[in-house]
Image 1 (cartoon, rainbow, N blue to C red):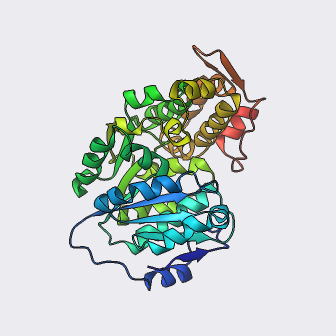
Image 2: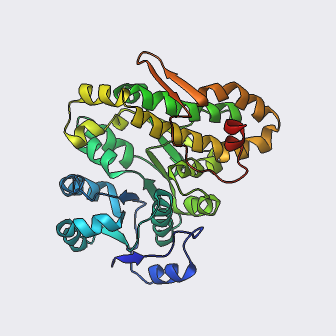
Image 3: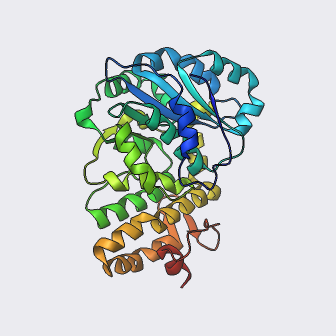
Length: 339
C-alpha cells in the first residue's frame, strides 16, 4: 500500500469523499482470520520513538495484520532516514501530512482512514507507540501479548484501563486530575470509565459510526470516542499501562515522577485538558439526561476546577495561573468558570 498525503483538512469535520476514493483504490489483504489492526499517531521529530519501532516490529507483525501510522510534517522533514525505512516496510500503512495538524485532526484522519480501508468486523486498536514500545520491551511483554492476541469480537468495544498498580507508577497529579473526568462521567452516566484512555479496541464499523460525532480538535476529543459506546463498552484493567515516560526518556522513574509531581506546567497542562473535557459532551450529553441536576454538580465541583490542591505534594493550582483552552461558544464550562 502506497503512502497517502493529506493537506487542507484542518477545518473538515471528517475526510472528504475524494480522499476515500483514492484510499479505496489502494490494495489491502483479504483476511482469512480476524487478526487485528493497530492505528497509532507518530509525532516524533526528535527521532526518540523510531528506534523503539524498529526493535518491536517482529512482535507487531505477530500481533497485528498491519499497522497504520500518521506521520506529522515535522517528523517527515527531520527524520528522513527513518521515513525511508518506513517506506520500505509494506507492513506499515503510512499517512504523511503536508501541513501541521491539531491532535484532533491527526487522530480523526488516521482513525477514519484505517476504519474505511479495513473490513467492517476487523478489530482496530487505537493506541500510542510509546505505550506499545514500553509494554513490549519490559516485564509486561507477556501479559500484553496475551491480552492483545486473545481479544475476540465478543469482547469489543473495550477500554484497556490503567490498573491500580499501573496508576501507582504515574505522577500523583496525573491521577488526581484525570480522575476528575472519570468521576464526572460516573456521576452523569453511572459508569466509571477512563475517558482519557491510552488504548481502546473496537471494530471498523463501530469506529465509523462514532467518527461523525467527533467535534473537538484538541486533546479533549479522546473522550468523544467513548461517549457513544459508554453503555456497552467493556473494560479491562491492565498493569502494562504503567507509566512509560521513564523508559522512553531513559530517566530514573522515582526522580522523574517527583519532578512531574512538582511541575506546575505539567499540572496546568492536565488541568486544561480536564476543563476541556468538562466543557465537551460530558456536560452536553449529561445535561440532556439530567437537566438542572448538572448545574448542581457543577456547583459542587467548581471549587475543584478553580482551585485544586494535590494532597501530599502541596501543589495549588488556580484558573488564574492556567491557560485554559478556548472552548466552544455557549459551552457550560466557560459559563460556570467565568460567571
